[in-house]
Image 1: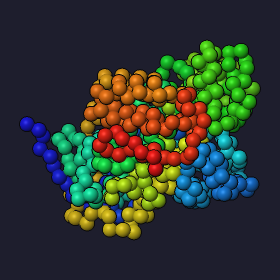
Image 2: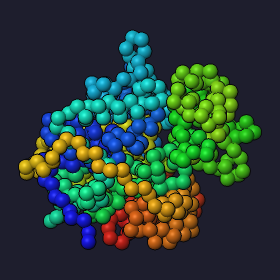
Image 3: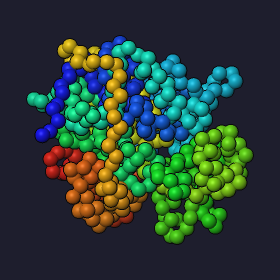
Image 4: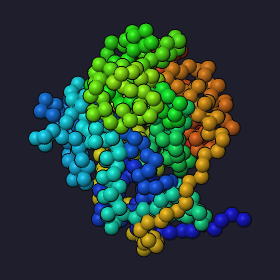
Length: 501
């Protein structure tokens, strides 16, 4: 006999995911009530907490939101939504101040002005940091503290979402997996803020739990998914025997470090080129039998420990001193530009289902994310959804069915042994360089795993990569090396069928 399902009516939206996007949405909703549910502890196991680079914002005297938008559009390789890009770039300076108001401690000069860093494909120094290379952790601390203080935010930890309930064509609730059995939360608005898919690859800088669970929830609910093939591989993951691989922020190259092979030859002339360009240059070296290293001995050199304390500590733990030794690096899955197709309000093609952060495809990133735009997008779009929900009657007005503010729940179930097989298949078929033969082989090998969320999302990603018969941004096909006319790939249930849109 199956477990009895409990039903609760929630007074307000349910936010699935407790990283920067989800908690920004919850905080902005106040004083309107909401419930945040998380597969683990609030704020733990999120990509936000691992983010080193910073947040892009045109706050310098020689910068402007227009230039920030122009750099974003150039990196996006023809697939950005220009209106979305300009709206988010315009919102960036105020977003920095909003986070400071929550208690985020930005790095500043003695006179109080923000310290600004430079990263790849940015034309100006516009990256604001917090605690050096621990920006994500500091921002996450600020929003977690604010959420726990807020009387309008209820929190349910260790309760993974298993199903979005759709009735009469719109969202009617979300089902959770709890130790006492399934719980159906009745609500007319669900916000997905579940993060990315790096855990589908054998080499990633993301938490291994990031396996596209939100994409699977949305797809099975009937929502359209867009551009799933567009995966950004970060070129400087530390190549050591750790899973996931430690990230060496692009900001290190912004401070003068260069990429070389074992012969001391430059991997490419511009170490701050867009990430797709750098990753492919590295991959070519690796396939030719070379090793690739990040050389930070001269610059930042002896300043490394002071400027990048977290990265320095990670390198030392791996037996490497960045000030005196070359750092072995390789490309690793880092960020997903694809996601749940949403409109300007953050709403998917299923009424009442919203998405923010890495799980969403907003149109900001296009085919290749500009460095340090992801934390910005998470906050701006999370808050934007909240503003929309406050203006509408989407939130259910029934009696609150929530017995207390915080539920401890139980630890999430570990992934089964099939996940490592899925990771190997996805990596072999949809890595830095792709071709039709490898993609078709991956699709065939993933077929037995379609009932698993990771297997489903991996199959959808590979299918979209096969459908995009061109090279554009982070998507590189060796059998189609040139770009075609700009278009999006869109996938919907029920048959893993893609279409151009």
